[in-house]
Structures are given as structure tokens and as C-alpha cells.
Image: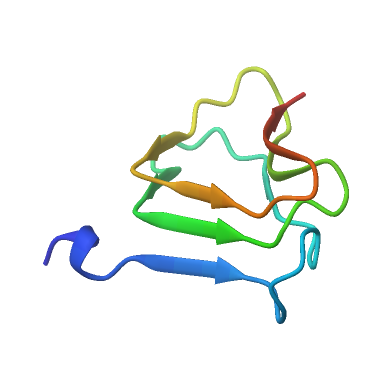
Length: 76
């Protein structure tokens, strides 16, 4: 089954910018693949997706970041 037929939605309990911190990526594993994921109402601290390390290379394809209080994606 294709991922686009079963998208993943990560959202806050209410549609308010920064309702939750967001996702922190710290793994350099090659299977760190995000496809058809929507992240909404996050970014209360730094970003909706915080990539902690310049050596990390997550794959983000067909993803949507919406209603973030700060950066959509932040690379440290």
C-alpha cells in the first residue's frame, strides 16, 4: 500500500500555533524517512522539526508543516 493513501497527521490538541514542541531528529540511521507526514500546531520551542546534528540526513518527502509558532525546520 502506498504511503500517500494512508498519510500521517501529527497535530496539537487544539489548532493553536506552538500547541506542542514538535519532533526532534537525532538519529543518523538511513531508514530515517518521512513521507506523507503533516505536522501541525507545533514549534513552541525552536521548530516543528528540529534536526540535531549537521551529519544527519533524514529524508523528508511530500511532507507538510503548517501553523508552526517558529521555524518549520531548524538544523543545528
